Image (tube, one colour):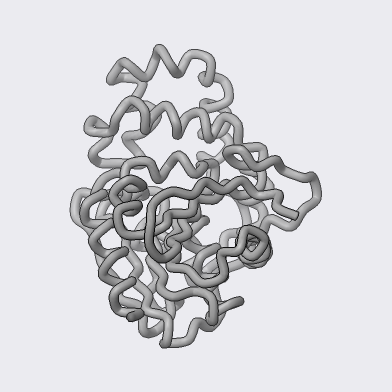
Length: 263
């Protein structure tokens, strides 16, 4: 039975997009239409995010989420697909490729979590603040986000190009965070873990980080030795933790490029 919320658009080989912690499938709006010209784009809302409810007690660690998404994709008859994920979604995507390499055609990780030597044993100090601000400003957000000061408060740490982000992008992100009941369970599911699974070289992989990622900084969270050894590693300039916001054309290009390698 399907329980995850999916949205499907476009034509071509399936491309599954997995959002990050406290986000939702709306995060892909800046690139979805462009990708839909070449792929059948499938976006998913993880448990407790977007339009997918959170069932108390369900496993929320990246490996369990990966298995759950794979099962749910089978339920809608998506068997083989290209794959991309951002942040937690990037980690989930890596786990999906490890669990079912016969199903994943290519993989693009956008600032994927889990690539650290020393796993976190506690939540980020700012974790509670981000969730608190989103929940307590949700009713004001539609009006407040018309003002630069509000957008700066909410997005200057996420994007060096926050002034260029659209009103819709900022509002979608705020509403996604405010309604993400799976936020803390998913955060806790990452504690004391890192990505340490094997992905065969038959799956072409590109990993993209921004040079201004303050959420997963290069000094602690971008350890190349943890990533699959055959992965191509790219750093985008003037780009933060959401490359599909800051460098949308470049992200689309790289997703298409790694997909071509699989042919």
